Image (cartoon, rainbow, N blue to C red; front, side):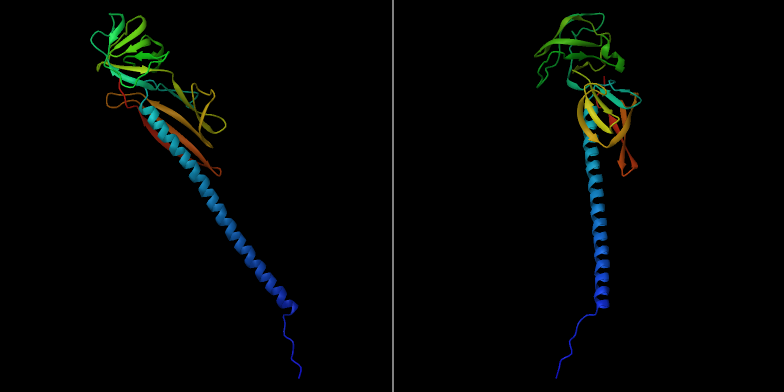
Length: 239
């Protein structure tokens, strides 16, 4: 007795191939969608982490900025500030107008190493006074004595007898390449702080109730959608 041979017909094979192809397409589309979502989330998380780093760096820098030294320029694209190297208190013999002297007594400064170009600042009230006689170059700091290159006379004394030592100013700026950079001057070569970012700065003058403030608005670009993030920066010190 012959056994009847069993098998698939051509139509059945075609149907199976079509079903498997449909399942493969659906599966690959699902995997591709998941990979795209993961990649997008990872990219956004990377940009947000970069922005968080910049926000923390800005907070620390402006917190320790010289009071009333903040300047916004280039239509809000650049924020210039003067970092404080050290602060101390001056003695009764400090050269406040009408008195003048090339040396004076100060409270000792810990962990300070003098560098050429260091300057002493007393009672700065406006940023444009950085080029006035409220800022005087230092020639030496030895213990509790500060020396100037020539006899100097500061026009106004600080109510708290506070003296700040500064060096060069720094600038944060947004450029046309959607980068935030930190440099010696606005739009000069500097360190890249974040990319794929735009924004602007705004400075609020101090009042009797608070110190000076700066506000920065970051505009992040997520696939063509702009997301604003605002940060308020406080100047911790007073004249």
